[in-house]
Length: 333
Image 1: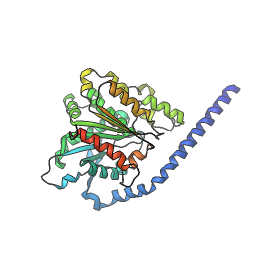
Image 2: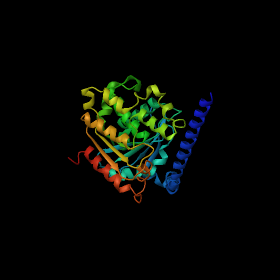
Image 3: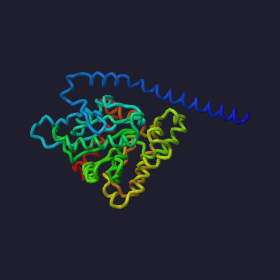
Image 4: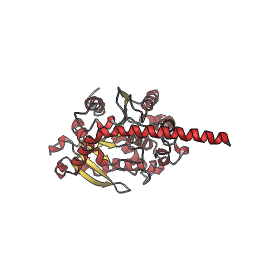
């Protein structure tokens, strides 16, 4: 009994230490205070309506999306414009589309594409399956309603950060596998896969069990919403892109769109090994992919530094994205 009490005390001390360290890590976010006020002011300013349409309702749950215009939209005779759907992160339990207005604005300019930033049913409003369904619904919205905004319904790139990168990969693989729980006709699922020209993952989680072990090492598994959003440990394998890839047959593997992975080497929230391991798996399965490791970049900088040209990693990361995006569009051999 005494040994048990002593063990529990040690366990409690370790947990307190790890949580304290995690809180101290969060204090680093104070450096992004200037960006916080910039996006808050930009999003609320009605003068910026010329750049975007906010609050468009889509999908089976009535979520909202924002659409940021491509610069070529100014030309009334322009051909339909390519689309990037950006899925934000937030550990499957936080985040909202307005936070990423500056990122979406810059992305539209840099890629000459229209950028869509949808909200989705984060936990506890929804579970990971609901989130995948919501991403599918944003794809369907482009296919069925995009013509109103001169969007090219057959030229869509999925891009996500952290949990959003996981959801983009998972959504694509679910569509390739055509499961019934998406509640989308099989022929429509095939059309959606054909419309996805590429998948760009920024600092993503691709193996849920591996990430859970990393959370335990950091002592944050009890405050993380990940295992709850997944519906428990028994579902980790089913919702891991790495596991799903191994179960696809030859025909399904051929239909997986090209994948681009970017990850900072100083990321302690999602270790760089997450992208490296997925890269190795994709290569072994002969799926077209590219991996870019950004030295000394952390988890948050992967998105905050895409919000303004004066940010440290802005040109480095956008340089990688633009090069790979041009491949999706057929501009580079």
